[in-house]
Length: 392
Image 1 (cartoon, rainbow, N blue to C red):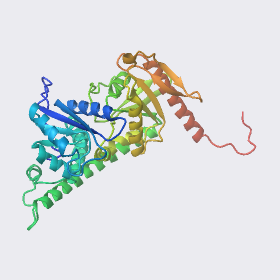
Image 2 (image 1 turned 180 degrees about the vertical axis):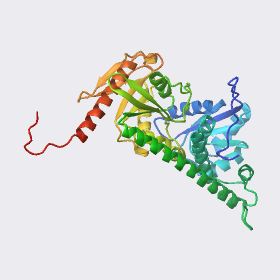
Image 3 (image 1 turned 180 degrees about the horizontal axis):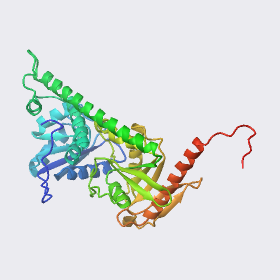
Image 4 (image 1 turned 60 degrees about the vertical axis):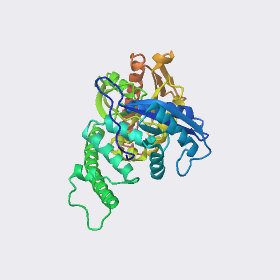
């Protein structure tokens, strides 16, 4: 089974997972090992997998051949046999050779963290653009680790007669994937041009553009719905939202603004996903203001903030002004309200998107941001006074 193959889906009617897995997380001395393991369990559950066992261990460095070392692999094999798991998930990125060797040693499918996240995205993508982006990311990931025949791609894409004389199966597979990647990249380029036209129209209208960003499951879509009544899908699970949704929000004191809900970020977000979703994330890059939503009740929030800022830097959005939104105060007992910086600008808002407490404070912050943009535009377009002119 290859790295990008999908997991059996959970039963949507009952929510019952259809496959069991053993999780493996090795500690190489990082101080966030426990947090990473807890997140891996949440990812597995989000993918529709039952966690039947967890194996941990400490190493100075990964084993070149098996990543975990022969003794630890024997322990994994015993636990897998005892639990009846059909899948082993590593909380790390495995090389193609390591994955292949582990599958042979464990006699079952082995996937790494990247493949797990890619599978969740494949399950959640609903729009045409989202599906194209996910398929592109999966194929780019697979292209680096082709180890056996992928003839099903020929059947799916109508590739009969494409094989050249004397060409190996692996060469054919790579060529088929490369051809499909070019098709998908072309589609995304057209969609990106459409987004650019829509964005220019908003800029010409001098409308404040706001983009909601944050760690996955921080409550971004819940906040988006609370502000705009858009009815966007929101759930207590990782990566509930993949498709960017933009709505207009009317503020009594400043008029209409646009606000966009975007995909959540996570540590070790696969680079293929970041690249594939770049067109979607352009909304973030070109925004006037980022609402950085944080789960205030999560003890890992500082690390999550750092991870989000790292991805924002990677896509070129690190210079966009941010407003920190501390969400879920109903879970930690904090009071709603606003905090201002030394310049008097609102830098932080404490609220609960679920209960609505503190939303007025956020609207106030958005109103001030819209007024600041309007004033900046007025000053930039105001004719310069000539020297000696009388100013009243």
